[in-house]
Image 1 (cartoon, rainbow, N blue to C red):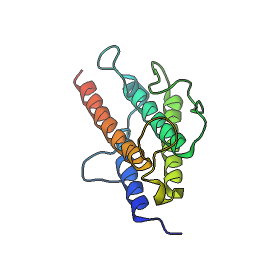
Image 2: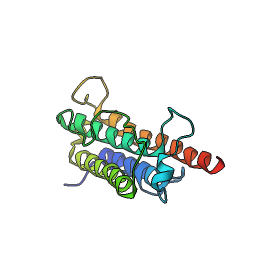
Image 3: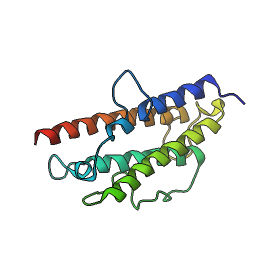
Length: 161
């Protein structure tokens, strides 16, 4: 069955913000190209987030929106905790794992959006809050771009330090 125009537009927006070429500049996945663990762990100041923490944070919110859209159980994210996950140490395998988690959470969200009837878009997603499914899905794309900008800034700040 073909996807509705609304669902197609949401998928396009998610992909443009995450991995598809776009007019506005680097997408979230593009900001991570060439980043190694030492760069991912660098902080501009104590108590400020590093790139690695932004990656796990973005993965978490893709998971959280997917969970809300599907009514899935809380506490099923593969990293203990919620929102931000401290990252102080790690090697190339750890970094690759967490970037892979981000990609997997994005893929799962896309699967859920593709399977969603467009009639659900204007309805509140299950759980607390009054956000509609469409608002939450669009919000993930905006969230990706917000953090892509932060990551680009962190990379530039590190170059100057």
